[in-house]
Amino acid sequence: MIDSLMLSAARITTLAAGQILTNASGFFFQRDDRLFLVTSRHVVLDEPSEHQPDSLQIELHTDAANLADTASFGIPLYDGGKRLWRQGIDGAGEIDVAAIELNGAALPPGCTFQAFTPQHLLQADEHVEIGSTLLVVGFPLGFQDSLHRMPVARHAGLASSFGLRFQGLGYFLTDGRTHRGISGAPVVKRASVDGELPWHLLGIHSTRLLGNRDEEQDEALGLNCTWYADILMTLTE
Image (cartoon, rainbow, N blue to C red; front, side, top):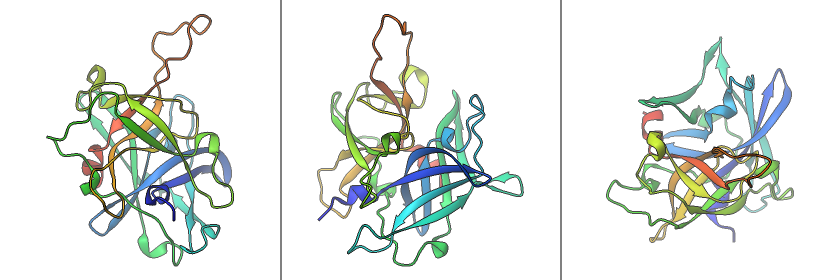
């Protein structure tokens, strides 16, 4: 028996002209009969570092009874120069979240995964206590269970008031150890009710918060930016 949460995350490889660029994390989100891959926007395009892949590749489990059975699935990012992913902008600027609609009919036969839905998002009147234990599920530094192709779950604590836009931007803070490769991972909290995927989707992990740190004198803050998951209701309309 494995936790269904581990089947919600996808290891992403970015490519340009067939050459591997970077590794990242993502997860599945389903709205009605439409399926999306969600990750950080800077995974699909990051102008400051001139990171501009033309496609992504994910790995899907193809046999629920044998999780070592997987198949690669390619996802183009452009069609005739037009970008295929969706990104959000609010009053404070760009939101570091991207959603790419997947062609369900093209997925490998028998593929097994779990997808978050709008029902996994918190309602406006639901409270998350400061310091609550959260999980960040992904592939730090590309690390995974190399046999079963599974992600790992890292602990993090809620470090800013949930529901309050930190510094006026569309994210909250978590306190936890993160690494390159986990950008785009789902940030979740255990739900109090049972179900096939009994987790609340709170946000999408973006990056470490650097702050005004003197690199010679100060340790890393250990704080991370997580964009609120309700942006997905806009991106998947």
